Amino acid sequence: MLFAAGVLAGEQGDYAAACALVEESLDIARELNDSRGVGIALNALAVHARDRGDLASAPLALRESLALWRSLGDGVVVARSLSNLANVVKLQGDYELAAPFMKNAFRLSGNWVTALE
Image 1: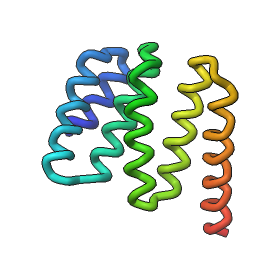
Image 2: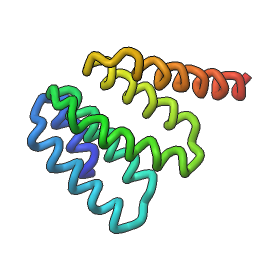
Image 3: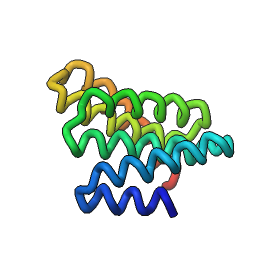
């Protein structure tokens, strides 16, 4: 519930409330050793940071989330994290760094789509 309320607050532009709620959700996920909950909360914090223009902290949360998803072997969410990271890095103006992130996201997404056929 905390996480959903945080996402809703972010969608409504109330980033202070959004971050507080998602950070609390992150703390609980960490206490429970809920790796997926941690990854999801980190991604949400990064998206909120990006949306409010905080391009310095967004990549930190995305990189932590990406490392977690890689350790879990969840290629679909790794692709999403790479895409989010590419978009933030692109917004920072570093197109050369963003390109390999996006290429890897497309590569992973393509493998996932192929696996469904």
